[in-house]
Image 1 (tube, rainbow, N blue to C red):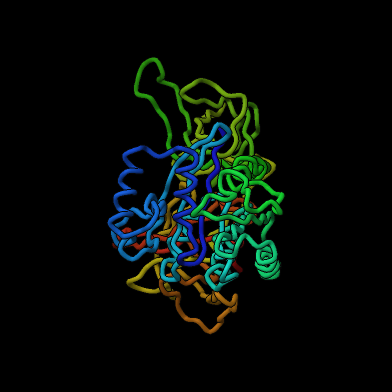
Image 2: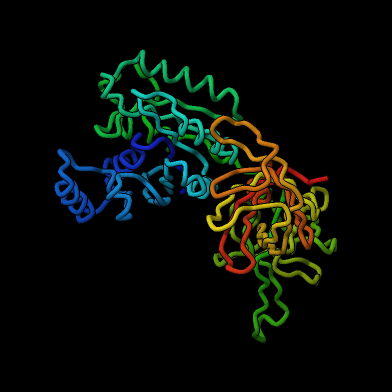
Length: 418
């Protein structure tokens, strides 16, 4: 069954957690004891109704403040699809959490309050969704019950957002009027908005086409582990395990191993269930070659006639996540890209990007917590990468502090720096 990963974002109190709670409740994917716990908590908080937002606001601090702080992951399924939801925070100071939750999403839902329209945080999260190259964006205009399900108000918000979105790189944009509190257009079509002719939110999530979003052109297989069984039966077995990061690989394909440049052909592609005729992203497989080549973790198997960029100089957008110290020129870090880990130094900070105004501050000398900027990195050993806009797997990386081993940044590669 196909899986869709989606993230929710938007301003504080726009109803993200309530929307997810409604999805879980109306699709009957929560247990009775969970619902009873939420009902008890709602009564203790003095709410007049069952607060479905408590299904996702799991941290005590979130419940006390009535906001989402961390990324809450939830899972549910319908007969058509499996879903992984990342409920991301709305506050500015949790931008890094939004980037983390949305980085692997196929679709983003940005909620707006129908009364308030397009706010600064709505724009910020839409820009981040665009920056992260999330292929599909849904603008859910929530709390339509508080504007009497008025079509005119929905159209006003829709036009306002479309004007802003024209400045962004969004491939697929959908507008849906909803009331998460009452369930209008969330799982079922609303009888209160007969003027709306589109699908409900769940129907759109079930039907949106994501199969072609992944890069099936550029074959990329980062080697994660070399399999050498220590038994007489498999004494000459050598397999390379990993997850396909792009393209399609078949037995008989001519391939090149990076960084060595040695060539071979694919002998077989295997899983625990047996051999495969082909492998494609994001399948986890073991690849065997016809030639014995010295291959280790961090190497990459690619097609001979379609190879990634190979360089030690990287031009990238970085979201800084370290609250203790900023990123500056000459910062020394560890970079993890696909299965390859090496050291890196910041050569230059081109600009800091104001994600509210989209203004580029070229005089910035550092990136602080939750700030995003364009940087040039020099790595100790070459990386094998594609531009992030072409392949989100081989075009992304994380930065790790050398001493504490804490993840301090996430990056999207723009290309080779000069």
